[in-house]
Every structure is written in structure tokens, then in C-alpha cells.
Image 1 (tube, rainbow, N blue to C red):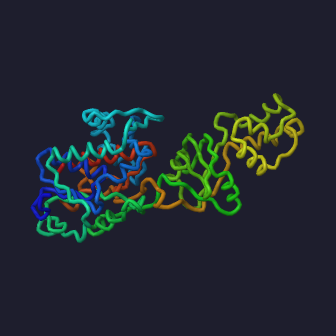
Image 2 (cartoon, rainbow, N blue to C red; image 1 turned 30 degrees about the vertical axis):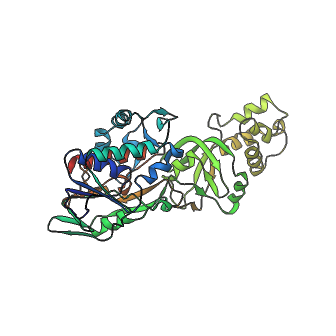
Length: 390
């Protein structure tokens, strides 16, 4: 390994998606780059993504699919490095891929192919890897950043957020940001299962039951599968709205997104002898139909139930409120919402406005995408933006 005490043009902290592509981009422009990570292997979070096949981008990427205190910040990086650009890179390395659903692209083979591609790109740029080395104290004096024995006029914070700590994730990015006077938007778990307690805990008995729903929270509205778990609610629809949910608020679930509010009135005409449970069981998993019918407590045949009562049940099923008591935390969160305040950064270069030579990219920044490859695209786009500026 090259002596890490040598002088470099840039030091990149974090050998994840954003850090590796940033280092490769700068290295291939002739910059001498040192890539430092306390983990002994690069791209650990990439390896577990997409069930091991890496949902590496989304062809429907657009700025409105991202959450940030400044919703316009992501526009510039995303417009300058698009999904098509990353697909071209993937294909240049001979990696086969497929579109699954909702614009999500996966490797046909393994996520290890993406990590190998990024390492090869770094090698092509002469990037020096320093893996398995704690970052330690970061110094800054006389226009140079110092990490261990290495010095450089540029430092890139690409250490991500605290989600999935078992992979070594920490809040280092925020500590460094504050050290250099940058504000941090409150970090919290995102794309994370929600927990239920109290009267709603009975839904845990449905653990393993999944159904397609429309979930709503705040400004978020997603139609995908929801999954009941032994702790509460999960599945793509729930993970999506978790980014929009705040503690103490309710979420609304439309269990029958294809049905009009008065569908039970029509069902009464078609099958007057049916019960509410039977009508629900035609459209939902049996155990869920039984639980919802019990909670509604509208017994008897549909023929004997007033249209007004049936319409009210239909409306309730179209906006069933749950009030989660929390989330499963950073341990189960796919990403972190919040992070280094974008007001302190240039959206063109990702450089800190008041600290020349300091950059922040990827999940460390207050830009969080939807589930489905959006966060990887932000990593690629922000990494390239910084790599081109180094």
C-alpha cells in the first residue's frame, strides 16, 4: 500500500457509494486522492442493498423524490449526473441489470459487481485506499487538512449517516461538520418500520400478513405493499411514509385503494346475505379481513345494515388511522433523514461556502430520497459533483 503519510490533493473520508465514485472521478482527473475508511472492506452498505443485488438507481429520478430543508438543493447535482450516466458506467463494466418495478434497477447478479466496478474505477484513477484505519483526529491549518499522517488542501466528508450501525455507521459526519462550523439538520431514521403500541398492538397478531395499500403521512402518499410485523408496520409503503412521519402524528392507510368509498353499499346489492367479514375477505387476506371486521364491529348480513353505516365503514377503511409510537430506529433504517445543512454548501460543487476545500456528499448531507434506488443516485450525483470540483 502507498505510504498514507504522503501529501495528497484530496482526502475522502468514507469508502461507500458517494466516497468511492467521488475519489474515482477526481483521481481520473489527475488528482492524488486518499480514500480512508475505518471498515476493512469498501462498500459494505452497497453489498447488503437490494437483497444483495443492489438497487443502484431509479430511472424516474427527479428532485421532487427527495426530502430536504432546501427542496431545490438536489436539482443541480441530479441534473448533471443522471441515471443514464450511471447505467452507462455499469454497462461499460459488463454488468447485466434489469428493471424490477417503479423504475428500480438491479444487478442481475450480485451487488459485489457494483463494489468491484467502483474499486476498478478508483484504481484507474490511482486512488490510494486506506481501509481498516480509524479516522481519528482531523486537523486544519495553513490551508491543509490533516488526517493521521496525511495532508491535503481538500477534505471530502462521505461517511454517511448513523443508519445500520452494525455495518459501522456513526455520526462522524455531523461531528466533523460542527467542528468546521456547519449546521446539522436533526438526523432521524428514514425508510424504517414503524412500531405500534396500546390498543393498536393487536395488529401485531397479523405478523407476516401483507397487502397492497395506499399509505399517507404528511405530504407523502404511496401505493405499495404494507406488511404487519410483530412490532408494528413495515413493507415498502410504510418505509416510504416513515420519511414523512413525525412522532406523535397519525398515518392513514387505505386498505382498499381500488374501491370507492361506497363500495360496501354496492356489495350489499350484489351479495345481500354476505357479512362484512366475507365482503372484506374477497379483497383482503383472511386474517386482515377478520381483524378489520372485528374492529369495525358491524355484525350481521349486509342486507340488514343501513347504507349510511356501510358507507361510513367504507370511508374508515379508506383512511384507517394508526398512531405509531415510534420507529425501529437507526438499527433498521435504510437511510438517515436530515444531516449537514445544505445552506452551508454549494449545490454545484458540494463545497462548504465558508470553509474552502471542505466538501460533504451522499447521505451525510440533508438530502434523502425515496425508497427504490433514489439514495444511490444521490450518492453518485453528489460524489461526481465534488469529484469534478476537486
